[in-house]
Image (cartoon, rainbow, N blue to C red):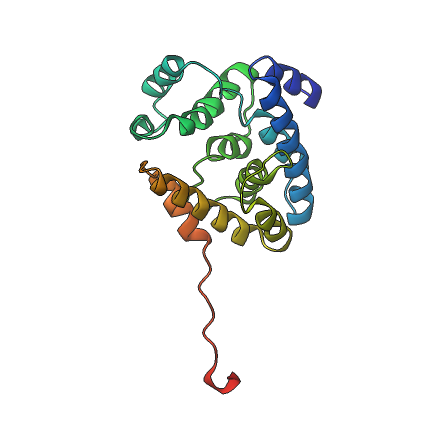
Amino acid sequence: MNREQLLAAVKEQITKHRYEHTLGVMETASRLAVKYGVNVKQAETAAILHDYCKFWPEDKMREIIERTPAIPKDLLEHDKELWHAHVGAEVVRRDLGIQDNEILDAIRYHTSGRENMAPLEKVVCLADYIEPGRHFPGVEELRELAEEDMDHALARAFGNTIIFLVNREKKVYPLTVFARNSLVKPKKKKNVQEE
């Protein structure tokens, strides 16, 4: 399927507002891909499809999670906001014929992240977090960080997500903690002679 066909398929699955978000993620992912040397076509495809199942009924997503061996069952014990990513990767593979595992992983991990994310996964995840339609405290700082250091920006984004969940007394999906920790760079110690 070409880009226009993918966009048309997605438009049938999501709300108008979410479609606008998807366009913003696609544009942001494309720009980040160029900046960080990631395949632009893969980034655009994953960005277009990242929320394909976002508005599917909970019982339908639960059924797919339960009957698909590749989807971790512990997702069912965590926030439903995570479900659409794993379900979406499976559904676009099955229904839209997307066979590129890098694209599927970028869709699969765009909400939770994971340890040692591939560059394409980082681009799509970060684009989802900072696309122009997002408005929350600290988003401008993340946008600036994304222009300097994708890993630092993504570590900060995951940190913000963890704090958000903890403050609402929600469970944090372990992959998100692993993702953040794998992106945090140790602070360089100041040399005593430099002071």
